[in-house]
Amino acid sequence: MTDLLGYQGRTCVVTGAASGMARALTESLVELGADVYAIDRVASNVPGVTRSLVADLSDKASIDELFRALPDTFDAFFGVAGLAGVHTSFLDTFTVNFIANKYITDRYLVDRIAPGGSIAYVTSAGGLRWEFPEIRDELTPFTAPERSWDDLVDLTARFDEEHGGELAGFVGYMLSKRALNLLVAERVETFAAKKVRVNAVLPSMTATGMLGDFAEQRGGLDNLKAASTGPAGRLAEPGDMAKALVFLGSDLAGFISGVFLDVDYGMNALELAGINPMRTRWTFAQSLAKQS
Picture 1 (spheres, rainbow, N blue to C red):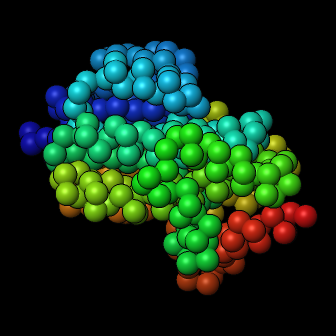
Picture 2: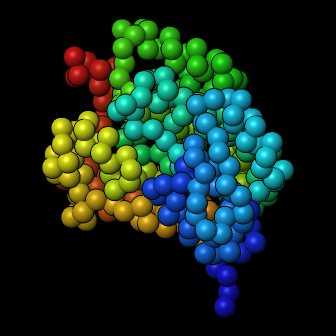
Picture 3: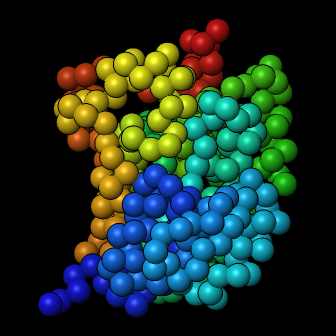
């Protein structure tokens, strides 16, 4: 039988692999015959992984140590790990969700992904509308290639201070996901020159370990479900996102780069068509004004 997905014998790296959609992805990749390096804050116990590595994505030194332990080249990188921001600070949330991913992309992936390989990041439906010019203007200071880890930490801390010094972690979630979407778009040409594809999956609300945090932020699980089920009539499951990621990293998606795949059963399409109101049209500054 033809291996249409092309994972047999290929080396894949997955962050956040101990739980949720990243665990479901890791299980799928192992089943498809990939050599999987599973990364998380705790050891991943998914059977069949090539190696489980513990790393703290909020810490640059830990990331550097991680990449010293990884193969010199690999075929696919899936950046899934993230924080909801409900119980973490603005800076910590933004660091894990964006600064770490930018650092990994610009410092390591640009030289470590084999030609023909792929990168796929999990962003969020909470990061929609990043492409609107007035919103993009808020994000470009964070995505500039010359921004180092320390520069970004300082910039993020100053950004917080400029807005009162008490920005909530969940606010950092939205900003970080928008910034990561823009980063993917801005790096398409960089990676195309190396015959590497880079894409993003934008999940709708998914029943992972972070569901309780999101429910708390929305005032309870009933409120969250009412706003997040959409045409599917249910929340997404981790496997729904894993399947989308498997596709984007596979040979079937060999001519797909710079795609922002809404895995939401049409929720964003209804907003774009004007059937449902567009919930995230405002800039970051406007969002803060609404909250105050």
